[in-house]
Length: 504
Ligand SMILES: [Zn+2]
Image (tube, rainbow, N blue to C red):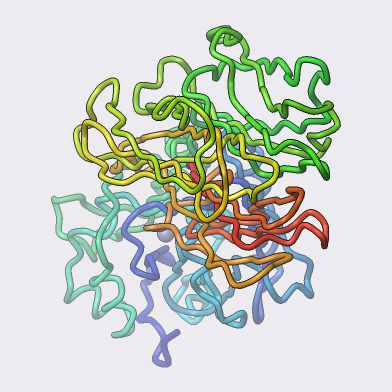
């Protein structure tokens, strides 16, 4: 790190540690991540042994639940490790948790074991116990923990500058913002503050000889709080093939029986089938806190009209969750009567209870009854969203003759940071077999959201049958990739759009 080398601190080697990458606070990894750790450059067997056993110790103490990450050593030839540990002279440092992913150059370390140079000092030799403590401390950073609030405060700048090479002194003195965390006295996340380098009596001195070198329970408890347990949400998937054929349904056991939102992901209607389809949770079959019934049906023809791979994703919440409001609307509610060709219907929806601010509203297409001699074209969406309600739109166009278009909607507080939603919209550019696109969330999540729900919101298929699918094969903390496709070559579509909700 420094050409000049540190000025020897002749009582014992100081364990100083600098936070890197401007991290102000703990940085948890995305839920479910597997974090691969590797050594880069010359790392001595002593350090490797200490790090290997420290990682194993943390894994044993922390466990994998609720901390849903797996930290393990990468194979020696793995050039894509997430955390890269190097050893050398100067001050130790470490990038906190998932911030390591932002250090993209594979030859750059994300953690620095700064014990090498101290051996040049007068009488300053690290003991195995001290190396072990540094390794345990580093593991805390690798998991995402920051230094506690008081660990970078109250340095004596002149003394620090005498003690350290100039660039390192600057880094120690100018560390960016501090974690708001106040650690227990025995926390492994504390580091040395030799009495000569800090203003007494504010904080006073502290060295490894007086610091606990164990992975302490309060620090582990803090770490677990960084990785919250699963929120009370469920996304369930049900295919037509899984349902009871005669009643077009399946009872689903779950405690999440409120605000049920079906999302149609795949729809296969047989050739010459009626264009009649509906997907819904039947209110009188909901057993609060116990189960609800998936319903997906076609009617007016044989059961085989609805293909076995027809699929819906079901989002639902516990009865006590008051953040969410949901509802349904059909064109027959707005305009009862016979089929109409190409119509734009809308209606004001009033929320059962007003939101503090205009919420986010997601509307999905859950059913239609369209004249079999015309083309399946339908679109649903929301406008004019206020704290008390919104306008729902149910539309067909051109020669599409529809008796009914059905939609479900969900509203959530716009400032709830555990949700993101949006439309998986694409232009119609002639007949298509498949189209994939990337979508960025309005703002990134702190970690990869656990749940992703999606469903169709617009369908335009100029065919005598309908075979379409929307899929989200992958997502990250900042966005997702969606794919819309025809289920067979002869089912090419003009346009398919969907909506999604991502939940942390
Ligand atoms: Zn540290």
